[in-house]
Image (cartoon, rainbow, N blue to C red; front, side, top):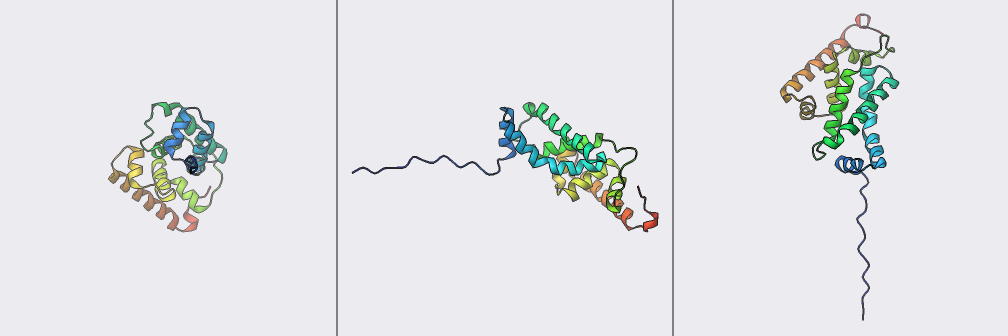
Length: 174
């Protein structure tokens, strides 16, 4: 008597491949992996860039610059390190280079107060309080001690609180 044994099933693909797996596939020219990585990060990066570029169209240009630079530098990057942090570092650099238009669109009081923060303070506040990045992540992104990031983020929070707590007629409007 013989017993039929089914061949082993191949492992099911993961629903959400890791950033490292996507990066390795992108290096091999896999366009779908690039699309997956862009879809994973473009939305949050666009939201961040919007606070620096002033318009959705200019924010989209900043995000495009981030992914273009990623593609240029990916062959030289060790993808076992945190690809996510590296992408956020690229986004931070691109945001700091972006310039607000001379006549930015009017914003609500909170967005206007955020816009009035100095660029680095705005970026730290948006990445930490807005996007939920840890102080350790921010220290990696900005290549500085975590204590400095904590202090600068705290100062950004205080400036934002002062801007939002003053009388409405004294607040700057666009």
